Image (cartoon, rainbow, N blue to C red; front, side, top):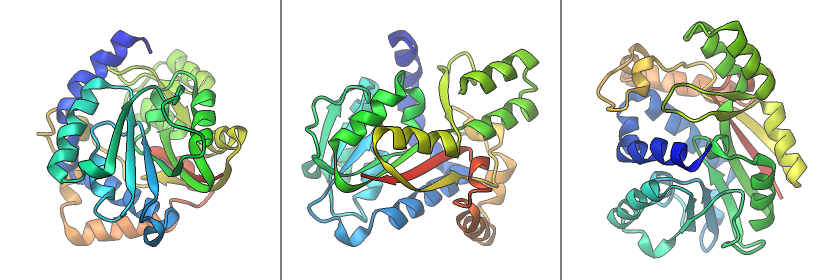
Amino acid sequence: MNKKEFKDFFEPYSKNVDNANKQAFWKLSDALIFEIIKRNIPVGTSKGAVIFDAGGGTGRWICDLAKTYESDFILYDLSEDMLAVAKTNIEKAGIASRVKIIQGDLAAIGAVPDSSVDNIVSVYSPISFVGNIETAASELFRILKKDGTIMIMGHGYHNALASKINNYIASAGELRQIAFESMVKWGDAVPKLNLFSQESMEALLAGAGFTPTKTYGVPVFVQPGPEDFDATNSKKSRISAALENPDFFAQIFKMEMEFNSKKTIANRGMNIFAAAKK
């Protein structure tokens, strides 16, 4: 992705991304992600620790995590537009004293010293936007302390193929290209994105020196409707409408968490969310 593509995508995206969870599909996805993080990064050991949010964008996840974790945070992102929104969000949340904001590429984290962060989170697939994923993984390994945990998310390979077949009726040529490259382009305004299976994400982490511990699909059963990607967040899909029922939401959440880390199920995930140790 060149600089113009990057700017053209993230400038408008930064203005409305924080409103996405008005849709119940994204509320469910957020709830699953938060539960998975809590199961892999113990809350009680967080005081005085540093959580590095890799590709943290507008700081939304730091603002949420700061309510549960007593950690300090580093927000690291390449987009100037996203970080401008993050600064406002962090100040409104009253956590500016606990957050250091750094602009930079995940494949070149020179501003962060070796073995200086306790845990790493990377939510909603920043690694899918990175040009050199092996270098980015090595950089994340470098900055993490021994025994630290990384939790990193990428766009799901198998879900992308299923979506391109069933929702887009993509051409045979496009499907062959996606299958061969493990990359997908969802539209003219969206850059080409890296795709990951459970196996390829774990291989990427292992190749950088991490020990993979558990990989999840997020979500594995619930599929978003086209309205859930509405840039204005004003439309509502059938599944988002259904998930507004608390009983239905709770049951789907329970089923997702029961199955989403099973090796036979995780690759169904819209996103692949892997935990690993250093």
